[in-house]
Image (cartoon, each protein chain N blue to C red):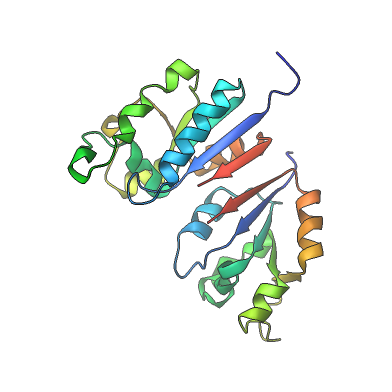
Length: 101
Length: 122
């Protein structure tokens, strides 16, 4: 069993194939962190159908959610919010980070 | 072999012209190879178009990137992989590419990422 990778996506899934490509090659147990415009992906209805949380830990950067008005309580509870310190902790916990833009 | 030999994986996901990403990836691959690192070079999504035969970029005053790929064996870069689904989506096969490559499933690519010390993704 390999150590997990941290996949960082900074483009919206509604506007870019970055997230699609990332998900195609992410390994169960990996972490996915949405940052910058990547947090807009939480608005993508396909999240609801994809059931990604069953094999990936999904995070979104709280500051980026807040900046874009996406910090409402109604957001998908399977997406965990992390602040910048949490971002660093994730990067340390994972063996490598893979940025998708 | 020295202890500081790392496994570096380069994923390239953009078409060859218009953006500088494709050329930047190639330059990084060659640089890493010169420094005797273990390199995996992976073409995903639109990136597979970089390898398409018959490019004539002189028509748009650009240098032919595909010609440079034939230099990869000289740098001992032989771990070259192309996403199967990306080829299929564009009606292409390995025969349409300028160099011999390994056609890779998503699982194959995941396995390469998981053995890498670092991954560069442009």
